[in-house]
Image (cartoon, rainbow, N blue to C red; front, side, top):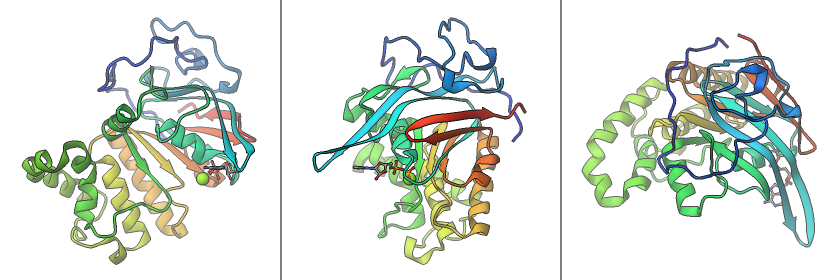
Length: 291
Ligand code: ADP
Ligand code: MG
């Protein structure tokens, strides 16, 4: 994937500063010598990557993240000190075998769950320790999420499903006032993902690829700069999966979208800018092309 010029950087989230803690160890400002002004952090041994988009701003980082599940009196350690860093416009894949903790990690990155220890930062601000309500707001405004099984609402049309993030953001009355403008935006986006002719279909009237395209449109309709995708092609046949992947790449390149995608498929991972390999709850390698 070709390097893209950096044109966008938001210094704060909509929520303002959320942490006074030091920048995370291993944040990519230090990777490959691409230090950012004011950065004082040492490189982390898990992040021995090639110089890559040294000018791209740091979007997302995890610093020594731990997660253990507790089930029926048993402890199930899943993540044991995971650190990673993602720069603006990068297409990153997290790859590992089934059960290696990929979804757990993605959920932590997307504030759907909290780590037991360690930090997650978005635009260098800590987000893992935000209260529930603020995490919900942050997700609604800053992060797009897509999943293997789409999670569309069956009773809503393609267009309505795409508008759900606005319905959540504004509530019934405020959404009603804004509905025309947002519907226009959603229609335009649905055309771009190839669903302009399916606006009034319900999910059970769509193919798998069309359902995932709807989920992609829903994830992007609020124009987040970060998209997190958990095995987005895992439920699709090879051809449809490749088409969905192409679409994600195009969107990433056209919109300066930063993408973090989880996959168990090495072939898919090979096509990304940065590959983070998970094994036994640890990052065993992080590589990036030098494009
Ligand atoms: P992957 O996405 O790489 O397949 P997951 O992150 O889904 O892996 O799961 C990692 C491990 O954590 C698995 O062994 C799984 O059984 C366990 N696990 C995941 N979620 C929970 C949970 N809510 N409670 C207990 N164990 C869980
Ligand atoms: Mg998974």
